[in-house]
Image 1 (cartoon, rainbow, N blue to C red):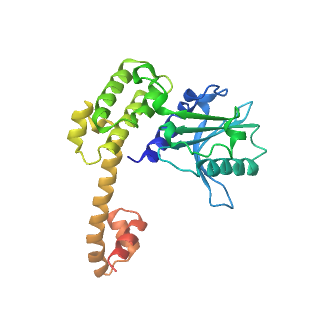
Image 2: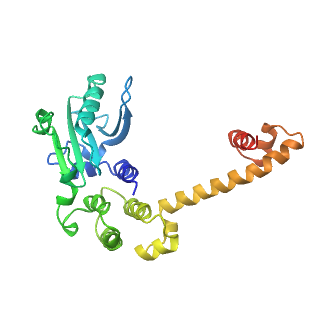
Image 3: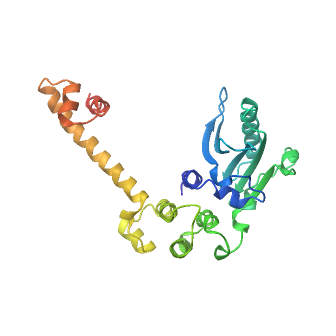
Length: 265
């Protein structure tokens, strides 16, 4: 499963979820926005940064890392990236925190001494998803994260149970259709070899109503249009039409016509 993509989508749509995991959420937690930011003049990119709203009285920035595989260099890289970003933006924030989310405690780097000043402070919090407790005892947002850990055998059951909870319970922090989209995305990534009909039967949903299916449908339409252009553009070029004329004739962007023309050379 492409967990990096999954968590990017979860946090992008639902940044407040991070603050359900930590002990002391900041003021205006639901107004934070999630970004992936590049640290200039370095080769570093911080995948998870939660930026405070512009009108926040206390401007606290949160750095987050989701880890589903063992990486002994994780803390070296994560704290370096975070502090470099703070150094280049030190006038914009008055406090900072780091949150590291592990699927399991066993994936934590063995060297916890080198960075003990951070790991033992109240500015760093480590979360172990498999230790959060039974799924039926957690908020829906936490259940979304736990769903990514489910095995093939139990994911379908957990997903259906979560869908029923979403339909029955109040979900003020995120529209229900957004949550259903995320559940569907997780399942589609997990069972990528299944047909749409098989996934629909598994979840009891009609995928045509979800964003993940609409995006897949759009991708398929774009692929078909690209194939059509590969066949049509060379024929029109032989008639003496130039690229601009072909684009006007076919009512498509000139860039698409240029790509089709280059693919035939």
